[in-house]
Length: 413
Image (cartoon, rainbow, N blue to C red; front, side, top):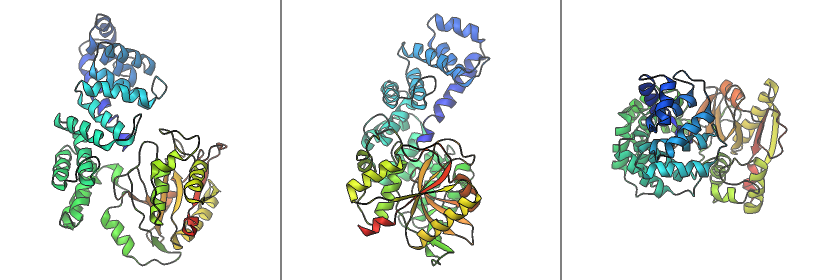
């Protein structure tokens, strides 16, 4: 969910840049800006951030122009400075400073700032996690017409995050957001109509899911219907298995501790992602959690650790690793892994492997960064591309490998 925080900021910036740069060249804008024109400062900030309007991309220069507009108490400038501090663009990333700028923007009534500050509280991004305050800011942004805030308000209403559960209001929010072509809204409407509370209207649910899957981000997401079908197929050792691992919504940079928590809950243990994080040494909130730090926390809280294994990032390593994963799943043990982009670049994301079907060529993952039920169905070929990491432990060598954590020791407690 956190990856969506800057989308509308970028769109708004593009609109402002086009409007103002169309009226004059960068030199004219600089003249206006130096004479105190905040809109010209904003236009230059966007232009230098994105490399548009006849200027070379320069994110430090972008920060400078947004800062000048913020000095004039401009709400849009506050929001954009928050975005740049959040992303570490032109300045060192700093979640606390980002949140401060989002708050300043939100308090002045800028709906994108209200949305972003709600994200701060929902995920614990630079502030203490507080769903009620997230809801409050999203209600304000939604009242101003911010459709993404409207969707997330619906998500909180359906799940009782920071507000009393209200399915009717949640559905109304999602219908409003779906009218703005939000694929997540279509997805959640499908989940609702499939549920008993929504009348178990399978055909209506399918229509909503089809709308959502027009967006690339949902093509690999498994619906509740997909999960029910996979669970209903009898397990056959070496051929197929599907474990009903619960879902939790992760906080900011808490994929490791949240994936650990859903696995622990599957085994019947009480588990809280933030408690695991608090007991992981040298792992402050807002940063990722190395697997050795998770193991130290598990030892302290539960009296056991999970065995770490790695396999080479090649075809043989994939074959050997998949064989081990299938065997663990056949023994009803989920496996924790890291995944990255198909090109083995970028930061890794921790998920739990919960099933497979060799006939269909599918591997099932429980991904706490997705909305409930949070299950992803990857083809084996895609899984092999994405299963890799190089920074999963505190003293990683930087070598790209296929790491996993065996969780069966959780049963021995």
